Length: 300
Image (cartoon, rainbow, N blue to C red; front, top):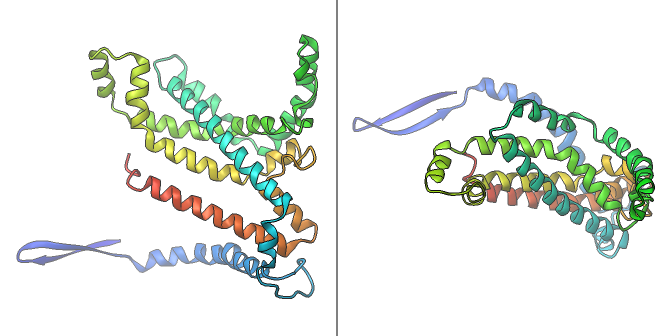
């Protein structure tokens, strides 16, 4: 990419960047693949959401019938309620835990580099493997421990309790998500100038006051990014829920993604494609919210 300068009255008046054609050549393969693999199937799916197609065979155009039916379907409404509640709870747990860990791992403690490496290990493990391991712990090890120490609430598996199964899902999802959020918070904390804390020490500010009045305001942009990105990711929860509860007990922990995929497998292609379209619109709105909240904060 080259930059040209237009000189007016002896002074540079305007800078214009000219993009070399070779950049478009390198961009073309990715653009073609993205269009064929993402855009075209998405547009086709949105079209079929206005039909009665079951995925194969003949179909008829039925307009907004699928969309109208979605808003009166208790199973779909339950999946949205569970998914949004789960996402909000997990975002809170992940960000509080990750921020406190980041504060500790950027403090003057020994072996902090090694501890950072240990804490990010869950990030590189497959979600379904994590889910199966914790499934065993919640179904066998934890009830056995609860029976041994005499805690009635732990003698049965959390995953079998329709009122508490979501807690287990939040715990496991948070355990996997904390490392990625932790790394972003560490980057934010390391970007805070040390002179600020030295001045606060001279003024007699305690560590708690420094944390609340200096650290938190200066990393607020990172908090916004972690909250929005985390919320979007948790809305797509699937593999961990499948490995832990498979949407049960009953349909108590069935997420939106699980509802859509189950519908595809059960012959409700057009109906669940309408559900997927609405879910896509929700994701786009959240992305627009993220852009509006992070605009001007991308230069830390």
